[in-house]
Length: 100
Image (cartoon, rainbow, N blue to C red; front, side, top):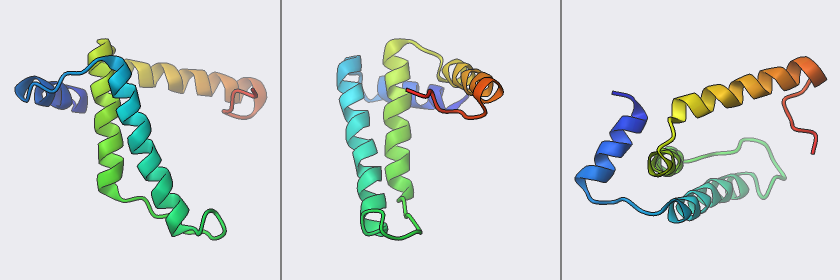
């Protein structure tokens, strides 16, 4: 059983399904918590040594996998597509960024 299956089972077992739009808002909130960790631990980017609390990272991962479940997407397949896209960009341009 992979992580997405674990989250899907948890959602089923606890009747925690929600529309994808709500999942995106949950995800944005949790990523905001990660940004808050970094801002506070680096004096808003003035110093090195960013600290991200593991439970906050776990919350963001949960939200992302819950979103994939609600959309009926295979998170692993989506990740593989993204990795292939980044590899193509690196080969073509020398960097992984989209250049936009």
